[in-house]
Length: 353
Ligand code: TXA
Ligand code: MG
Image 1 (cartoon, rainbow, N blue to C red):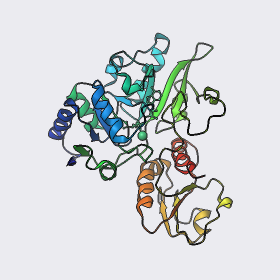
Image 2: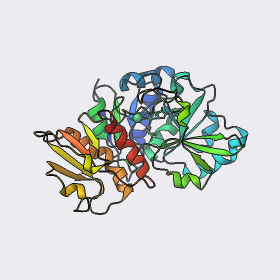
Image 3: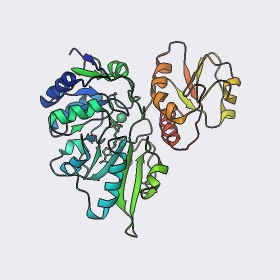
């Protein structure tokens, strides 16, 4: 199959490209679409066969459910049932964070095919803010199921060229909307009523909407570790957030998140690259070793939001660099979106530790 890439014009409405993508989705094809977080591999969420094709292209295991994307929050009740006790908190969340990088896990409506939710009674829903993504969903007239547009376990693509490297020849179309403005996948939240009858937000995946922001709306908790069966290892899917395997986001090369800089023991003959936060002499780590290469997440300014936007692209760049054997990453502070950055870097490094 030939994969066509259509270049979008940020100053234009891109109506033809949107129409073309929607027509392919309508026919049951899967296409790669830009969102503000990462590129998505979309299919008509109400077409079980088309959704099955996503799993096939991604080589994704069937136990890992997909996010359903809507073009407007008013359509939430077409895919999810909001329990009356959660109605106020869900309204507050959607008013504040949609369209945007927030995914809500809620009881699913029957018309959502089981293959979308991997048979779970809940569905993950998001209203993205990217105008082209919303345009495509609106033109299709049905919700779009879309995981990140990478092969299972790989780093999520934040550019059309990264999608092409992952899926060239396997999908008919990629809409190129340039670099994603958030750069990390959405925050996934499951609102629930606690034992005292209060609404509580469980963060199933850290992301651009931070814990601090959510705390202004309701109590926030991490899913309890006790919900995992005792003795299970990190590769076992968490029953509440089935896709959160530790080995996600793995570059092909060894990736070491150096939480304790004194523990770094380079092996002679290997070429190490440093992925540092700010650079410009601000990090001890930078001076402590003769790095083959140094790249900065937020060069010179040390802003976590910029680091989030650039993280996956830099991880891919170092992974593809023929002069680098091992990637060493400097930790960032776990404040705001720093929590999500550290989450992704821990997952990337967990595989070989
Ligand atoms: O920003 C994003 O969320 C991007 C863009 C394309 O929207 N999508 C994305 O999708 O990151 P994906 O499939 O790579 O990650 C979705 C995550 C998985 O970890 C999955 O397990 C979880 O959402 N998920 C989906 N449905 C769920 C459910 N019913 N309950 C708990 N977790 C769920
Ligand atoms: Mg993914």
